[in-house]
Amino acid sequence: MTSRPYPLVIGGEAVEPDDRYAIINPATEQVVGEAPEASVAQAASAVEAAAEAFPAWSRTTPERRAELLTAAADLIDAHADELVPLVVAETGATMRTTKTIQVPQAAARLRRYATGALEPTLDPLPPAVMPSTVLAPGGVINAAANRVPVGVVSCITSYNFPMVNMAGKIGPALAMGNTVVVKPAPQDPLAVFRMVELMVEAGFPPGVVNVVGGTGIPASEAIVAHPATDMISFTGSTAVGRRIGEVAGGQMKRLLLELGGKGACIVFDDADLKAAIGGIASVWGFHSGQICTAPTRVIVQRSVHDQLVAGLEAAAGFMKVGAPTEQDTVVGPVITGVHRERIEGYIRAGLDEGAQAVVGGGRPEALDVGFYVEPTLLVGCTNEMTPVREEIFGPVVVVVPFDDEDEAVAIANDSDYGLYSYVWSGDTARAWQVGTRLRSGVVGINTLQRNHEAPFGGFKQSGVGRDGGSYGLLAYSELQGLVWSS
Image (cartoon, rainbow, N blue to C red; front, side, top):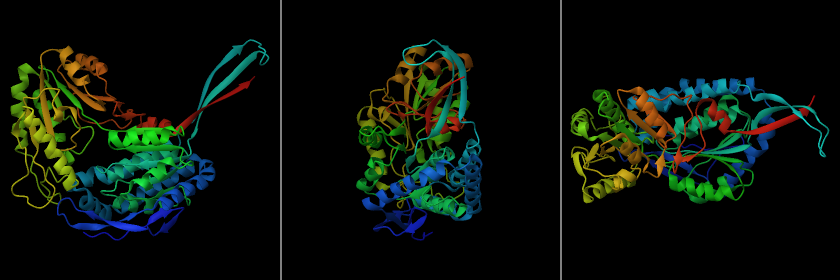
């Protein structure tokens, strides 16, 4: 499909960008459409429009915010037939993934925070009996904790789930009474531009939701560094997160950073191996491994190492690599040719360092067009090898053996990252205890399923702050103490 040209949205108005650039379909290498490239001045205008809209929007009733978020979710659902093929074309996500997760989950997240807008923001605290001091007379002093909006939030997301990630930022930010400047990933921004258009159509006041885009660093830094920007919510690489932290730190801006991951997946010898293999395999090729919660670093007890590797090798036979528009495709392309070369570089590094590829390791021979990578399984790995330590963000799983529980925990924690890890064991109490020892923001115990109400975020280089469920509302609010005498 070929997309129409989208404008920027600034202050409720469609604004023609200074320039445009091509969006490439990663499966066909054909142009999907042209995305707007905002100038530094346009990026600044978007922040200023959000700042102008903030006072009035922050005073709207929670019921009104909930109404508008619900209306936007309804419009996303109503335009699914338009959005699904657009997302498939620009992301390379399979049709099944797009129909079940990419588009409907964006609407679901807006609905979740429509409900969230109605959650209490005032938490009464127990009164305190205070003695007289030189500052004030004594008495029974009351207090309450009150959550208030931060202000203008710059929402910047990664390419893997463009609509879902952005809805997960816009939803809680607006529910709390903030205004937003949306900056989608440069690789696949078109559906996000359409989503913002639908939000304007739903009735959000001018300036409450603004969207700019582009490939240039100056415009992105203009959004982050603008004095009127109060908070930056970013999902993406650790390197970019560090740069955002540097720019934002000088002005004490609030940060919510969900950065890289290298999920440890500990498999004990008493685990249900069939379930563990099925879980690992299901995410191995999911969205071509372009997901930060993937259990790509499998740490398996030596006595069941060969069984697990054989099971994963067999599972790879059912992971068809092909066009995302074909119903039986499991593994589509990765986002760009440059990213494919990056993944291949990590595979070569592992092989040079002594790992063996028992599955994959190259490009599918039958697919000479599109940015495809074979699902790859590297064994004979140690925790010092490059593909074991670095986030690959592709369909590559590495396997590291261990002998006892303490060694497993030590290997898992010997990482710069700590976003989402897993423990598989027939003894759930043991798995729970091991999970609490992991330096990881989230731990899945005998499951790869998510609970979207749980706090989500990372330890170490995997980020700062937490979102998800009501924790997302906390992330987009300031905590205010109110104190009064009886």
